[in-house]
Length: 577
Image (cartoon, one colour):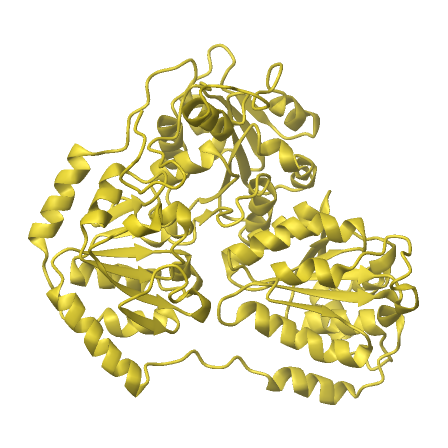
């Protein structure tokens, strides 16, 4: 008997003319959107959806926790720019998923969260695993739906994907009561698919006549500026404008500082690169920004970790702000000129402006790079983070994709990893979620199994979602996890030392590291660089091996991420030692 292929299953399910219930309607729409994979965990309130998925040909990734499921989907969405789908049941399934969705909202990630809900007849009765999903999810999404009928579901699905992906991306939550999942859809399939096909993304705005006048003003500001700087953020990546940003910077001879979310939008080794600005930015970067007379803010939100005390940020600079989200214009810093449009569209014009040379300004910036570099590490009892990260970069090459957790290791990666290509850096920026890195790395690797994926973590973050190591263990994905192990919550310990008179409390772990043993117990190869005789050469060789793996890197707990700008201070009030 001939085996039906996945594509055959998908097409047969999508085009079936038999009556469908709400769950099958949902799955047919996912097939219509060419969704290949969903991530989730089944439960009583979403089982009709799982039953509909059974014959669909859609791959399902069974995470070990709903937060992990959300982050796996988020990793997929971050690397592709397309909405990814995660599924959870009601009650605790919902509450477990909330953090991942909030992370997607903060970092503008297109995510579709689909949850089951108790039947409508039981809503409001404190039924088993009932929770007010709509109220919980509304503040952390672009849009939340509580679907009351199959006819409403047919309309909501298409709208949800458009909202998630269009404009400034973000998460959308669809909560579907169990009775809606089981109810028969009585709509006309031909009309429904025509409706789905007829809805097209509105074109991104082009320069209007008014914008053309503003663009002329922009050109004059650019021409008159003696010390311009580009302040580039995650919006560059979201608009796919990395190539145009590079062309514009080179033609205008303007130094480029990036936010944490924009680390990979400009090559680290480029002569115009200033690296990351702000709380943990290099001294020369923050000095250059303070001396600038024109700040070109492209796809940024003037976050406090980037600007420090806002009143002291680029105090003598005129500001040009380009962003697609009207809520960001003037929210924290009033611009002298703004463009409310897709950054790529703006740069199509800006990148073709006549070339200029700014030798005097760039010579001054180069001198600051020599005089005010990142502080060097003093040799401690473990490995030095910058040397470890260079070893990783040399072993994996420029096409490797990095994910990180949140903490000292994240900032060291941002400071020292030599990014050369776009879309090679995925981190949790706005919400700053520990436990992000491992499941996000799985999501990235599922989309690009031929690429090397490196998750940089710490011994605090790693254990936040350690259960997803078991999800990884069931694959042959090229995901390596690098655990910086100092037996502390490193960034917490650092701040306790610097700002709380060394009163260490609740920031250290007892006993030796168990990370490698956990990996080995799941069948994942490990390398502990703390073992006698191990060297960084072993690390380089290990990273080149196919399949998953985990590396433990002992780090001296006394090592700090420097510089650090204390909360409420300006970027020039940085602590350097």
